[in-house]
Length: 190
Image (cartoon, rainbow, N blue to C red; front, top):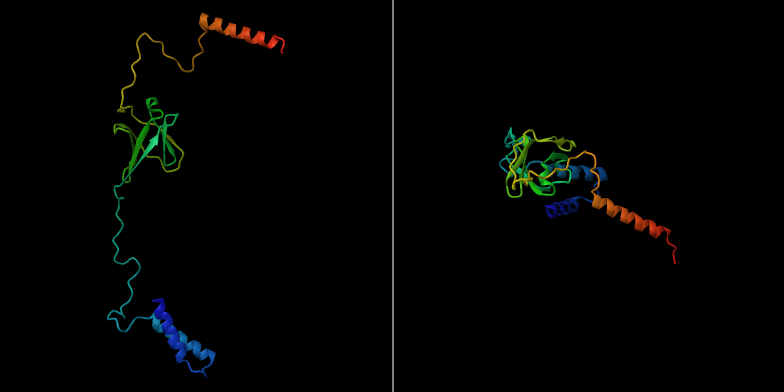
């Protein structure tokens, strides 16, 4: 195309007479440009008007294509999975585990499954980049491995409770360490 244009311009400049003034030469060049930009008289559809932009295209569908966005995420130490700028809470048993987060574009919720494919929870999708923490509405969760059984005779650690006193053996060891540190601090240095 560019080579055709260059050959046309070379031909035009050769056809200009030496005695033509600058304005007449410019009018001739403008006339040539109009003819080149206009319809080609050799084409049968040359005099037909151009279709409006977007003509012949179908209307956009009402719903998005049902594609799925799936990604593997790691559960943080705060028991959340971060997806699209929001945090989704998970059970404590999954801390540090890899989970698969899936979102189907035409659905208003988000599904989280274990690496083995067991469904953990389904959440209402939060607006992107909102910085929200979304908690599950129900407690129905299928875990890949059962929770460890706690023996009936064991005492559970209660969060928020006061610390328990030291056992006599621990107290004796602490006193012994304090005595050693005291002796080391008061002994003459070499």
